[in-house]
Image 1 (cartoon, rainbow, N blue to C red):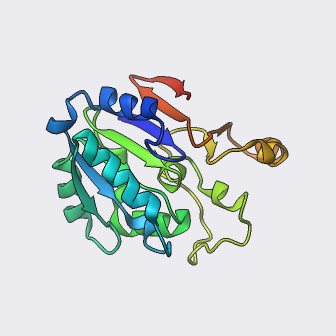
Image 2: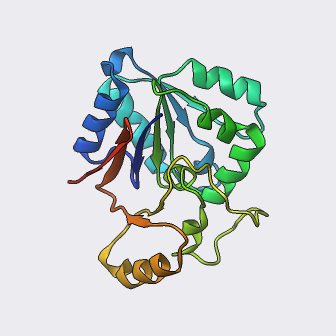
Length: 203
C-alpha cells in the first residue's frame, strides 16, 4: 500500500501535490474517504473542516466517514469504494480504540498497492508500531481506557508529529528510549512511501 504520513495534512502545497501523484489519478476522478473519528472529541475541530475544504477545492470526491461503532463489513465496503483513505488528526487513543473496534486495522493491513493511505497527526500515529508518541508531549492525555498502545504497524518506525525546535531535547530523549527509529515531522513536512521507497516532502 502507498502511504503519505503528515503532521498537518495538506497545508503545504508540495504535500497536496504528492497526494495527487500517489493517487495516480486526476483529483476529479479520485474518490477519497475522509475519516473524521479522531476529531470527534475535539471541541472546535476547525482544522478538519479546513482540510476537507482544501481537498474538495482541489477536486477530490470526498466522502466523510466515522468508523466508530461500525461493523467491519461496512468499513471494508466503504474502503473498497474509495481510492484514498485519509485519516484526519485529533485524539490518537480515541482513534485507536475505534480502529480496533471496527476492524479498520485488519482491513487496512490487507489492502493492495492500488490504495493510498494518508494520515494527519493521529492518523499518522496509528500507522506506526505504537501510538505511545501521543503521550510524549502530553503525558496526562486521555487514553480512553487503553493500556495496549500497539498501532497498525504499516511502517516500522515512529513519528513525532508537530515537531518544533522547542521539542529538540524531548525528541532526543524519547528517541533514545524507543525500540524503534523515530522520525520528526514539522507541520510542513510529510513522509511518502511507494513501491518500498521512502522520501521526505519538505517545504
